[in-house]
Amino acid sequence: MSSIYLAPVRFSNLSLLNIIKNNLIRIFNKAEIKTIDLEIDPQFAKSVERNQYHSTKILAEAMKKTDPFDGKVILLADFDLFVPVFTFVYGEAQLNGKHSIVSISRLHEEIYTGITDEALLLQRSLKEILHEFGHNLGLLHCKDWNCVMHSSGRIEEVDIKGDFYCKTCQKDANIDQLQA
Image 1 (cartoon, rainbow, N blue to C red):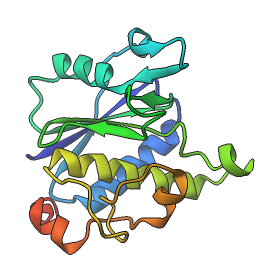
Image 2: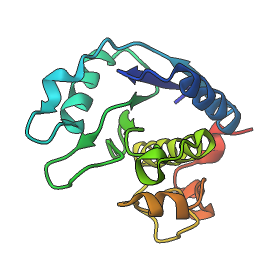
Image 3: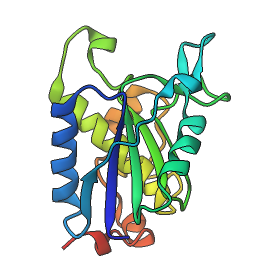
Image 4: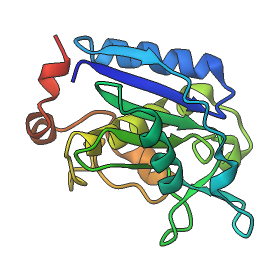
């Protein structure tokens, strides 16, 4: 894999998108990080009852549009995601697959405290992107709280967990092949 594609889907914070992209370029400096437009309108995946979007359906639509792309595709969304067995999800990924999706909807600090914190939003976003990307690389949830692959069901767990892969997860996913 030589490329990581960031695909915004109704993602309006272009400043955050550029900062995320620059951070991924810094982190994975052997990979080419590109932004692509898949022209996905997520309305087809909206649950009116829940006022959320079914992440699995959006991933399925992305799969149809990205066959020719060599690399991993990370969809970024502003809207709230769910899978039927959970109240919400921060993201979803294909294990050992090509596609993942991350929503920043519930990562905004103002939801919890009323205070905007752009640095915390970036930190949370990168953690969840790296987490879902780790699943694409074949990683399961890690028991190490210092690892970004630790499962997060609540925002406090996103904040507590580490911001990168533990040594075991780095080795298992061959992270060094993406870094100088």
